[in-house]
Image (cartoon, rainbow, N blue to C red; front, side, top):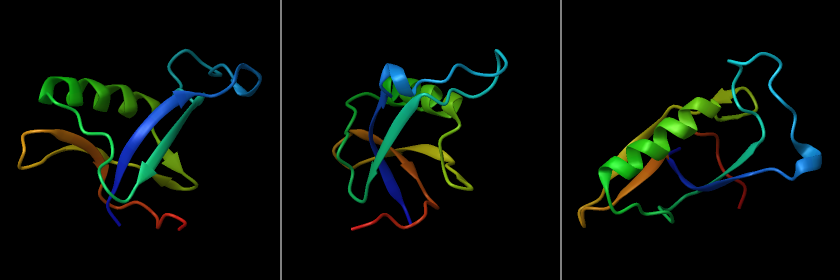
Length: 90
């Protein structure tokens, strides 16, 4: 199912684990998703910048690794989506 990134934030300091090696993916960030685009970004360049940050984290849910992309809406705003995400709990 397609889901949209709602936002992301760093976990609490007591949850943060440093990467094992310098180029390992960043694991200390929580990424939130929703079924409807809740985080609408006004400029493509900003959306692509956020996408690069998220791609560097190698976002995953269990065994699913998100392949995120920028999606443009008719009003000219943008969101970041995973096209093949596992179903979200209701």
